[in-house]
Length: 407
Image 1: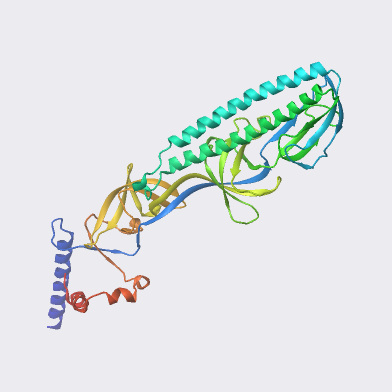
Image 2 (image 1 turned 90 degrees about the vertical axis):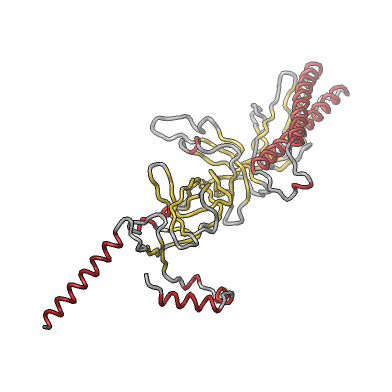
């Protein structure tokens, strides 16, 4: 009798398991399936930046070279020393005029050329000023509207070029005044003339052999230079933004202003070529020769909606994200992707910030669209203030449903 009861229990159990298995696996079964999701997260908004890190060194922005024409004059003496800091108008050297008429013609010819250059520079400044005026500006109703990054960059580039042209015009005017003073001295029958500097800076070198260039002056303004590899030179472009840091201090903002097309040294078959690039840094008070660290922003996605790369499922050339809906089901959603940096993927369309998604879909077997899901209780996400907003009747009802509900 006991054996019969035992066999009956086993038989009933097997039939029960078999029937339930059949009902669950049947294609049109009404038995509701649930998938357990252990890893889920909310899509967030952040800025992604693809960076190129390079060492750099501070150098004078430019060197000015002074030349001496000995056809109608004889060099007399230097009035400055190497390493000396000078200003515009500082006397640099004296020379003796040997042929006043010829020297006057030489100086007059130089003045005419410089005046033509100054006129061209002023025309450029005028054109740049018109460009700034033509840029769109927000009306009174649009003052709070965001300005396109491209428009800001264009205005910044134009203003930077204007400042450069204004400095160039000032240098040309100083050179013209210096030459005119020499012409006036010749007209007064003076034979010993003085040449003055048209720029502020530091005397870099003097040619005591009286060979050209006679004097080299390093400008007070500085830039940062770095060397790019053969691969990097094809990727780094002018106007890319750069963060520059010296000696662990606060980063300063800079911009790539020049990328040389030619390598810094003669090319060789057995060595890789390096290409110089220059970075203009705002408000930098650095000495030439100081070393800095550069963080070049190669590509940027501002305020992008992002998820981990591991959360994205790819089928052929299309990307999908498994979303967790408010009605308790998972939905396979088509998305468009953008920049990827350090395992974070920017989503350009298909997902908004704050939406819930499956973080590791590969870990879940047979994940299906519109399937119901359950998650483990995450105590870290529970806040006492959240419970205070719940209605007591709702809390009791849901608690009882959780205990008594049968699938």
